[in-house]
Image (cartoon, rainbow, N blue to C red; front, side, top):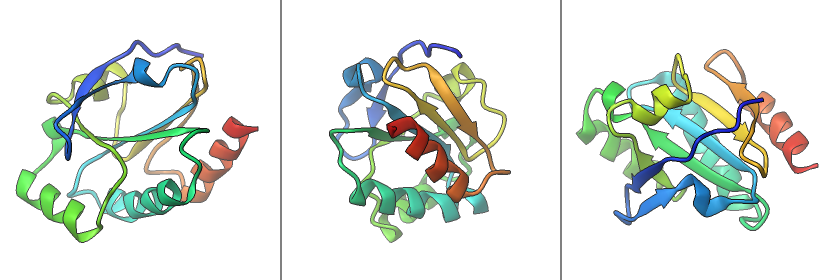
Length: 140
């Protein structure tokens, strides 16, 4: 298992810097996405529903918009508004954090345990059910 080195990115709505170490001792779900990706368009609203229904004290959900792979920031903004996304959206600096996590495709969802060691990784080949199963293992 890899322990993830921390990162700091700006949050889309608040313009505040968010650091992975802000969530020390808590499991974290990180999903990398772009607005032009059909799998992202399907998965992000599901992750949003999960985020709204969960106990935020138990687990942290972060999404990372991969600016360096994003086609149009305007389309991204429209996607966020259309889906009323309330989940934290961090803005990658190009593909810096995407590359740090050695992602190969979008969406990529990474589950980190409370020590921020990678427990599981899901790509566009996996279903949201697979991710939910991983989350249930993460919380048990």
